[in-house]
Length: 333
Image (cartoon, rainbow, N blue to C red; front, side, top):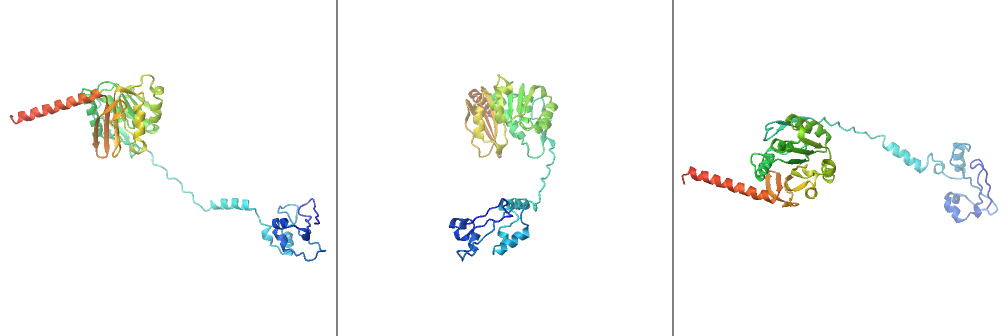
């Protein structure tokens, strides 16, 4: 095979003897098969040109050269490689699209629809966010919870003195109610900084309970895991309220974490608000369920020590006896 190679890949052609080209070369350069090679004494040549511009033949001459040998210039002189074509197509694909600007969310605002239900701050109005960002405990549920706790603690008129932990506190209405009814200290756990600064703290200030309150702006799960870091070695509470957003927690996992926490003591009362069709166990660690009430789609479970259940049962029996006595006296029986 006669070969002539120049140092310039475009100005000097590469001459190939078609008669001696093997099948592998024809497979690599299929256009060589279009060139006639009838005479064994004739040396046929094909010119292979570089695609790169600059210093070589101009485009028109390149086309004419390929046409002379019966080849389609478009197959060899494309403006860009497949890779560059894909890049170009990708850029063009985004040109016709309209970018939809996100609608600005309205600023969060508050209103005064809640109030303290009993105790020394009774009827004090409380702030709460407008909308569904925070879902405070209904007053009827809150009132029932505190009535049960006061009866179980042996003092129907007020809570027995102690420390309260308000998990998922939101507006702080449950913890504030606890202070109003006799608790000496309340820890509020709320992860939303806006709610803490615009709702919870103003409520504590307006009720005058800021000095006996501690606010933890942290996730409840993290607070339970690192309780000693947040409140020190004296970690047990007399009361714990658990009022999470229904759809954002797994109650089985949450109550398991609460029951195993060092925050729970042998005489602790735990108040849990939970939605309809949620299974709640009859015990939370060493504490037993002393009450379970339904208010429409909302349920209220209260766990406490065994002695509280017995004391509450005696209170109920005594109340029923007094009611029966009044009935008999009214009818002169």
